[in-house]
Length: 254
Image (cartoon, rainbow, N blue to C red; front, side, top):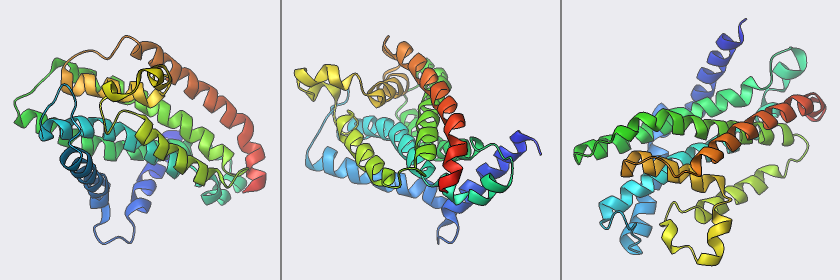
Protein backbone atom coordinates (compact mmCIF):
# COMPACT_ATOMS: atom_id res chain seq x y z
CA UNK A 1 0.00 0.00 0.00
CA UNK A 2 1.49 3.35 -1.00
CA UNK A 3 2.07 5.94 1.69
CA UNK A 4 0.04 8.48 -0.28
CA UNK A 5 -3.01 6.22 -0.30
CA UNK A 6 -2.52 5.41 3.39
CA UNK A 7 -2.37 9.12 4.20
CA UNK A 8 -5.54 9.74 2.20
CA UNK A 9 -7.40 6.98 4.05
CA UNK A 10 -6.18 8.31 7.39
CA UNK A 11 -7.28 11.81 6.43
CA UNK A 12 -10.80 10.63 5.55
CA UNK A 13 -10.98 8.56 8.72
CA UNK A 14 -9.93 11.56 10.80
CA UNK A 15 -12.68 13.73 9.34
CA UNK A 16 -15.24 10.96 9.89
CA UNK A 17 -14.11 10.45 13.50
CA UNK A 18 -14.57 14.13 14.32
CA UNK A 19 -18.23 14.10 13.30
CA UNK A 20 -19.28 10.48 13.92
CA UNK A 21 -22.42 10.19 16.04
CA UNK A 22 -23.13 13.93 16.11
CA UNK A 23 -26.50 15.29 15.07
CA UNK A 24 -25.15 17.91 12.66
CA UNK A 25 -22.26 15.79 11.37
CA UNK A 26 -19.65 17.60 9.31
CA UNK A 27 -21.46 20.92 9.88
CA UNK A 28 -19.63 21.16 13.21
CA UNK A 29 -16.40 21.80 11.31
CA UNK A 30 -17.98 25.15 10.43
CA UNK A 31 -20.33 25.78 13.37
CA UNK A 32 -17.90 25.44 16.28
CA UNK A 33 -15.34 28.04 15.10
CA UNK A 34 -18.13 30.29 13.81
CA UNK A 35 -19.91 30.33 17.19
CA UNK A 36 -16.64 31.13 18.95
CA UNK A 37 -16.05 33.94 16.46
CA UNK A 38 -19.49 35.40 17.24
CA UNK A 39 -18.84 35.14 20.98
CA UNK A 40 -15.47 36.92 20.79
CA UNK A 41 -16.92 39.57 18.49
CA UNK A 42 -19.77 40.25 20.93
CA UNK A 43 -17.56 40.39 24.03
CA UNK A 44 -14.51 42.22 22.70
CA UNK A 45 -16.00 44.16 19.79
CA UNK A 46 -19.47 45.07 21.09
CA UNK A 47 -19.20 45.08 24.89
CA UNK A 48 -15.56 46.13 25.36
CA UNK A 49 -15.47 48.10 22.09
CA UNK A 50 -11.95 46.98 21.15
CA UNK A 51 -10.91 48.39 17.78
CA UNK A 52 -7.97 48.01 15.40
CA UNK A 53 -6.37 51.22 14.10
CA UNK A 54 -6.93 50.02 10.52
CA UNK A 55 -10.64 49.33 11.19
CA UNK A 56 -12.65 51.59 13.45
CA UNK A 57 -16.06 49.93 13.03
CA UNK A 58 -17.46 46.80 14.66
CA UNK A 59 -17.52 45.12 11.24
CA UNK A 60 -13.86 45.98 10.70
CA UNK A 61 -12.99 44.57 14.12
CA UNK A 62 -14.84 41.36 13.24
CA UNK A 63 -12.79 40.94 10.05
CA UNK A 64 -9.49 41.47 11.87
CA UNK A 65 -10.63 39.10 14.60
CA UNK A 66 -11.57 36.40 12.08
CA UNK A 67 -8.25 36.77 10.24
CA UNK A 68 -6.45 36.11 13.52
CA UNK A 69 -8.71 33.36 14.81
CA UNK A 70 -8.53 31.26 11.63
CA UNK A 71 -4.80 30.41 11.85
CA UNK A 72 -4.83 30.21 15.65
CA UNK A 73 -7.80 27.82 15.72
CA UNK A 74 -6.23 25.60 13.05
CA UNK A 75 -2.95 25.49 14.99
CA UNK A 76 -4.73 24.78 18.27
CA UNK A 77 -6.82 22.03 16.71
CA UNK A 78 -3.76 20.36 15.16
CA UNK A 79 -1.82 20.26 18.41
CA UNK A 80 -4.62 19.16 20.74
CA UNK A 81 -5.84 16.42 18.40
CA UNK A 82 -2.27 15.14 17.96
CA UNK A 83 -1.66 14.46 21.65
CA UNK A 84 -3.45 11.08 22.06
CA UNK A 85 -2.85 9.85 18.51
CA UNK A 86 -0.14 7.27 19.17
CA UNK A 87 -2.03 5.46 21.98
CA UNK A 88 -5.19 5.58 19.86
CA UNK A 89 -3.35 3.81 17.00
CA UNK A 90 -1.41 1.40 19.21
CA UNK A 91 -2.29 -1.78 17.30
CA UNK A 92 -1.41 -0.23 13.98
CA UNK A 93 1.98 0.98 15.24
CA UNK A 94 2.97 -2.08 17.28
CA UNK A 95 1.92 -4.83 14.87
CA UNK A 96 2.78 -3.27 11.52
CA UNK A 97 5.52 -1.20 9.90
CA UNK A 98 3.14 1.69 9.29
CA UNK A 99 5.01 5.04 9.17
CA UNK A 100 3.99 6.68 12.44
CA UNK A 101 4.56 10.24 11.20
CA UNK A 102 1.61 9.91 8.80
CA UNK A 103 -0.80 9.79 11.75
CA UNK A 104 -0.17 13.36 13.03
CA UNK A 105 0.21 14.52 9.42
CA UNK A 106 -3.34 13.34 8.65
CA UNK A 107 -4.59 15.24 11.70
CA UNK A 108 -2.88 18.44 10.61
CA UNK A 109 -4.30 18.11 7.09
CA UNK A 110 -7.76 17.64 8.60
CA UNK A 111 -7.35 20.98 10.39
CA UNK A 112 -6.87 22.52 6.96
CA UNK A 113 -10.51 21.77 6.12
CA UNK A 114 -11.82 23.99 8.94
CA UNK A 115 -9.26 26.63 8.07
CA UNK A 116 -10.31 26.72 4.42
CA UNK A 117 -13.94 27.13 5.49
CA UNK A 118 -12.99 30.08 7.68
CA UNK A 119 -10.87 31.66 4.98
CA UNK A 120 -13.67 31.23 2.42
CA UNK A 121 -16.07 33.08 4.72
CA UNK A 122 -13.56 35.87 5.27
CA UNK A 123 -12.83 36.26 1.55
CA UNK A 124 -16.56 36.28 0.79
CA UNK A 125 -17.17 39.05 3.35
CA UNK A 126 -14.32 41.09 1.87
CA UNK A 127 -15.63 40.54 -1.65
CA UNK A 128 -19.10 41.73 -0.60
CA UNK A 129 -17.43 44.95 0.59
CA UNK A 130 -15.76 45.27 -2.80
CA UNK A 131 -12.29 44.64 -1.41
CA UNK A 132 -9.96 42.56 -3.58
CA UNK A 133 -6.20 42.46 -3.13
CA UNK A 134 -3.52 40.94 -5.38
CA UNK A 135 -1.81 39.73 -2.19
CA UNK A 136 -4.53 37.07 -1.87
CA UNK A 137 -2.38 35.11 -4.33
CA UNK A 138 0.19 34.78 -1.53
CA UNK A 139 -2.32 33.10 0.76
CA UNK A 140 -1.27 29.51 -0.11
CA UNK A 141 2.28 30.36 0.95
CA UNK A 142 1.14 31.82 4.28
CA UNK A 143 -1.10 28.80 4.91
CA UNK A 144 1.82 26.49 4.10
CA UNK A 145 3.87 28.15 6.83
CA UNK A 146 1.00 27.61 9.27
CA UNK A 147 0.94 23.95 8.26
CA UNK A 148 4.70 23.61 8.86
CA UNK A 149 4.43 25.18 12.31
CA UNK A 150 1.40 23.04 13.16
CA UNK A 151 2.96 19.79 11.94
CA UNK A 152 6.24 20.41 13.76
CA UNK A 153 4.37 21.05 17.01
CA UNK A 154 1.97 18.14 16.44
CA UNK A 155 4.86 15.71 15.91
CA UNK A 156 6.44 16.76 19.20
CA UNK A 157 3.13 16.63 21.06
CA UNK A 158 2.28 13.18 19.70
CA UNK A 159 5.62 11.54 20.48
CA UNK A 160 6.00 13.10 23.95
CA UNK A 161 2.48 12.30 25.13
CA UNK A 162 3.11 8.57 25.80
CA UNK A 163 5.94 9.53 28.17
CA UNK A 164 4.06 12.37 29.89
CA UNK A 165 0.29 11.96 30.09
CA UNK A 166 -0.04 15.30 31.93
CA UNK A 167 1.10 16.95 28.71
CA UNK A 168 -2.49 17.42 27.53
CA UNK A 169 -3.39 19.67 30.47
CA UNK A 170 -0.14 21.60 30.09
CA UNK A 171 -0.67 22.13 26.36
CA UNK A 172 -4.27 23.28 26.87
CA UNK A 173 -3.10 25.91 29.36
CA UNK A 174 -0.29 27.03 27.05
CA UNK A 175 -2.62 27.36 24.06
CA UNK A 176 -5.10 29.39 26.13
CA UNK A 177 -2.25 31.65 27.23
CA UNK A 178 -1.15 32.07 23.61
CA UNK A 179 -4.67 33.13 22.62
CA UNK A 180 -4.44 36.11 24.97
CA UNK A 181 -0.72 36.81 24.57
CA UNK A 182 -1.00 36.93 20.76
CA UNK A 183 -2.69 40.09 19.38
CA UNK A 184 -5.73 38.25 18.06
CA UNK A 185 -8.46 39.78 20.23
CA UNK A 186 -6.76 43.18 20.35
CA UNK A 187 -4.36 45.21 18.16
CA UNK A 188 -0.59 44.93 18.67
CA UNK A 189 -0.45 48.67 19.38
CA UNK A 190 -1.97 48.22 22.87
CA UNK A 191 0.87 45.98 24.06
CA UNK A 192 3.04 47.92 26.59
CA UNK A 193 6.47 48.82 25.27
CA UNK A 194 8.45 46.60 27.71
CA UNK A 195 6.60 43.54 26.36
CA UNK A 196 6.88 44.31 22.63
CA UNK A 197 10.23 42.55 22.22
CA UNK A 198 8.91 39.49 24.06
CA UNK A 199 5.81 39.47 21.88
CA UNK A 200 7.98 39.23 18.77
CA UNK A 201 9.40 35.95 20.04
CA UNK A 202 5.91 34.47 19.79
CA UNK A 203 5.65 32.55 16.47
CA UNK A 204 1.88 33.02 16.39
CA UNK A 205 2.40 36.78 16.42
CA UNK A 206 4.16 36.61 13.04
CA UNK A 207 1.66 34.10 11.72
CA UNK A 208 -1.31 36.33 12.53
CA UNK A 209 0.51 39.40 11.19
CA UNK A 210 1.14 37.57 7.91
CA UNK A 211 -2.48 36.51 7.50
CA UNK A 212 -3.81 40.01 8.22
CA UNK A 213 -1.32 41.72 5.93
CA UNK A 214 -2.14 39.47 2.97
CA UNK A 215 -5.87 39.17 3.54
CA UNK A 216 -7.00 42.53 4.91
CA UNK A 217 -4.36 45.13 4.18
CA UNK A 218 -3.26 44.22 0.67
CA UNK A 219 0.42 44.35 1.57
CA UNK A 220 3.28 41.93 1.92
CA UNK A 221 3.92 40.43 5.35
CA UNK A 222 6.53 42.24 7.45
CA UNK A 223 10.15 41.66 6.49
CA UNK A 224 10.70 39.61 9.64
CA UNK A 225 8.18 37.13 8.27
CA UNK A 226 10.88 35.65 6.02
CA UNK A 227 13.18 34.49 8.85
CA UNK A 228 10.06 33.29 10.67
CA UNK A 229 9.15 31.14 7.65
CA UNK A 230 12.69 29.74 7.54
CA UNK A 231 12.53 29.04 11.28
CA UNK A 232 9.19 27.24 10.83
CA UNK A 233 10.74 24.98 8.19
CA UNK A 234 13.78 24.30 10.36
CA UNK A 235 11.54 23.57 13.34
CA UNK A 236 9.55 21.07 11.27
CA UNK A 237 12.69 19.26 10.12
CA UNK A 238 14.07 19.04 13.66
CA UNK A 239 10.70 17.91 15.03
CA UNK A 240 10.47 15.17 12.41
CA UNK A 241 14.00 14.01 13.21
CA UNK A 242 13.20 13.88 16.93
CA UNK A 243 9.93 12.07 16.21
CA UNK A 244 11.72 9.38 14.21
CA UNK A 245 14.30 8.92 16.98
CA UNK A 246 11.78 8.77 19.81
CA UNK A 247 8.78 6.96 18.32
CA UNK A 248 10.19 3.43 18.75
CA UNK A 249 10.80 4.07 22.43
CA UNK A 250 7.35 5.67 22.74
CA UNK A 251 5.73 2.41 21.52
CA UNK A 252 6.82 0.75 24.77
CA UNK A 253 4.60 3.20 26.71
CA UNK A 254 1.46 2.88 24.58
